[in-house]
Image 1: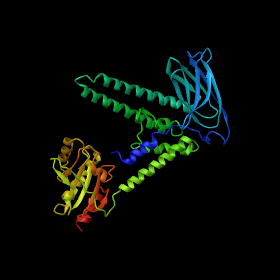
Image 2: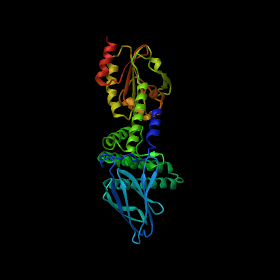
Image 3: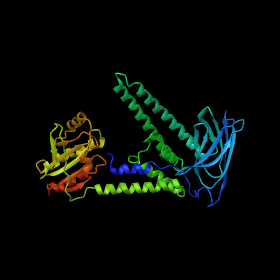
Image 4: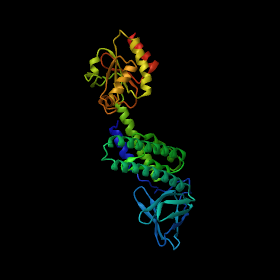
Length: 398
């Protein structure tokens, strides 16, 4: 389910370009102090090649120095810096690597013109972290590229649909594994600005590793970790401002969508398992337990036992249950109804979260229960198990 706020959060957080153009972090220097920072490099087969160092800011790449390799491929760059910052070292037609350097560091770099991805770097903990992350990122991108290539080759195969499903499962497995790796990288290195690169990595154009509307907690964690140590850095300030704004939007949407006790429960129409239509208002005149669930949810299946107890316990009273399923497979939905012995009203559009009742009730988790009185007004929400049964007993037996 993607809401308007989720789309706004996505637009707020994804375009951020990493940079550190403010006065820098007090963790690494005295205010206003500057240190000599250098890169000693060896570019094999790089005789006479140009090497360019640029600072990566939030708006642009700022040239720091341009040097030529000697006949052995050696080069030396030295500059004054008073801030921890991201840099890009460029060489050859398309070679580049991202560095994260502190003032006063002396970095040793060794690379090859004929293999731009093979290099070693020492003397900069931040840059070494980025190298580790980049290597894992590259490995996953190559695996995803191979899957894309196979899909193209198999288009004419009579078994393309089956083969593509297999490849899609592999794609999901690879992206899920790298998502997990990136999450661990962020938590294991929370004290380094290197986690900003992990936060904004992409699998491809428009396909971020971390989706802000799904992984907002990761954005908040990075914001919290870096604000504690690098609050002077512009990239961190930008992230903090955008996370704060996104959080306010999210909270505003939740507040506006929150069901208020005493208000009329939003009516809707959906389909029964036999295909006939049913409206929530068809049950007016009864206490209604409106329950959102899915056959694939273990928590929902466990909560179903409480609903069965409620039906048996309040049999003969003006009490009805209506379950709205967020399934997309009718066979699995109806099989779960039968197995759990859910002998009451059921509806579903079989579109998972993309269904009007979910939006009307602001459902963001399942199970989700709403109690509605005979007049159609909301009595209570978010009650489960014994709490739910106690509330129903209070309403129906008193």
